[in-house]
Length: 120
Image (tube, rainbow, N blue to C red; front, side, top):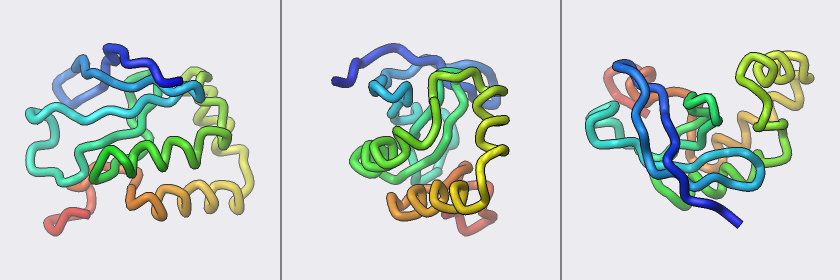
């Protein structure tokens, strides 16, 4: 069962509290506030308890689909540095599978603005 909580996300100007659904896997699903990444079409995020986001999607359903697809891929309850090290240590095939899950959900791993002037 998901629990709705206040979750502090990291933004360029510091932490911002958002209403997020905390999933049993340790992942968070939330919509970014209107004053963050203005104009970005992918407003929904799958995030980590550190406040960092894992992936962006265009809608709530896609974010939940993605969170479900990657729930067992890693121990999302690890601190960010330990989680990063565990991901780097995984096989190329495993990381490719993760990226495919993100892509199939219509998501990506960075903000739309990182894709240049045309967005995502």
